[in-house]
Image (cartoon, rainbow, N blue to C red; front, side, top):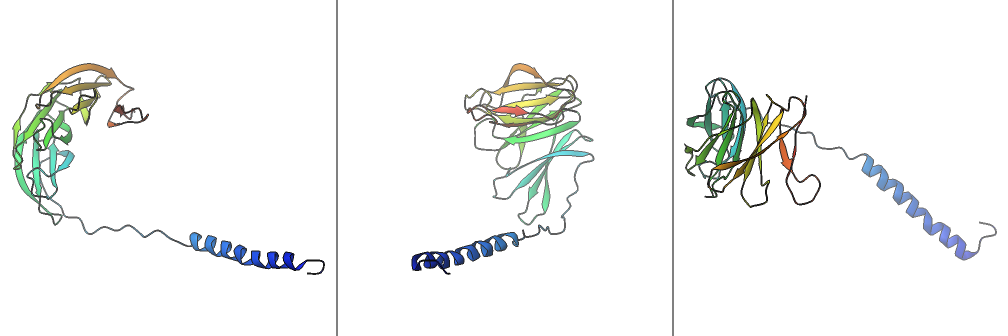
Length: 219
């Protein structure tokens, strides 16, 4: 401390605890470990013969999550009604096109009840099922797609406030766009072409311009 003024000495001493505090905080941060993830045993619900895709929604409006299951083997969609305990009971089974391969949930006719749209690989079509809010569905008008539709997504692609559909077609590497009328029906928009063998599709505003975009993986 020789040669230091009293002011310098006080400054040096007062700085030391700050250094120790900084080291202690850094050490504490480094020793925090994330909690491990865990799940209860699975609850299995048998339905269909070759289930390949599913969608979620409260189709009977009882406040419990239900499942809509697309089954390629039977060319049908099965509704599994949630009990709220993780188990499901069998609900309606609805015929759709051949080899259904993708399914989405949305309110296509604006009645506040959830509907379904299904991509039918074998029929080259999209089936629309309109929900009645009690867990049952009526068949809406089907629309033709490109060959081999495998997946679909929803979005408002023309910014008219109505829900539209985009369907991926593996057979010709394309996306079919269907513009919703707000009544459960759809008009056809120009087809867009993709890279080879598209297998899935999602929608989102990827460039933050307020317009809905699409993203697809290509093999």
